[in-house]
Image (tube, rainbow, N blue to C red; front, side, top):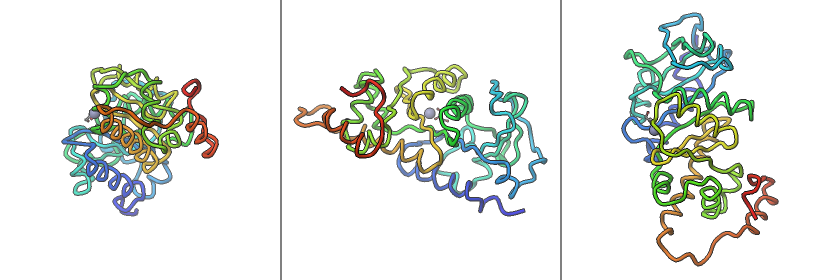
Length: 270
Ligand code: 2HA
Ligand code: ZN
């Protein structure tokens, strides 16, 4: 059996959450990440028949029966993951229609997966239906996106259009736009269901006054998606109080669509 700390999925996860912390997106225990794994990849490093503990999930998700996930732990600090991956991360396999999760590795201090496990698992189900390649759900608290939810309309079309106008790259990276949930209590099945519903039409879902969720095929792509939206929000927060002299016009956004072969969310451009 190979050393699991050398597994590409593990190295990638540790680097990504460290980078998220270094970007200031994950203060204290803020943020959580889940990565869908293939059984054949896990089996190179673990005896998949060896269950350490079984955890109740508190929801059902039959689509995820038998699926493996590498997930950040509840109450754990991203800044510590690189120093103690086996305490701060866990590998689980869902069973009983998603109601239970068999722990195969990690959470060695007796811990469990993130409190936002419902939002993660329900979002995986939603994104898989849109893109079977989707493997990652990522949540964090980037300061400028959060700040924007205090001073900008939460209308999804308006929020998306503002971000598209803030940097040329935005429409190229997230032509599907940004969906927005009003403030809701986090860590619940309700916010999980609401997030998954929003994930049906976009890979980014802002939680007003809290943070953002991103989805993607791999950790790099999902990180880059959030990074680009956060850059847009940073520009917005730098200029929102100043007289606007120039912008990116809808005509120019259409040029970007053609040049980069992306399709702006239906009805979002004039
Ligand atoms: O796990 O970010 O939303 C800490 C959080 C909860
Ligand atoms: Zn959060």
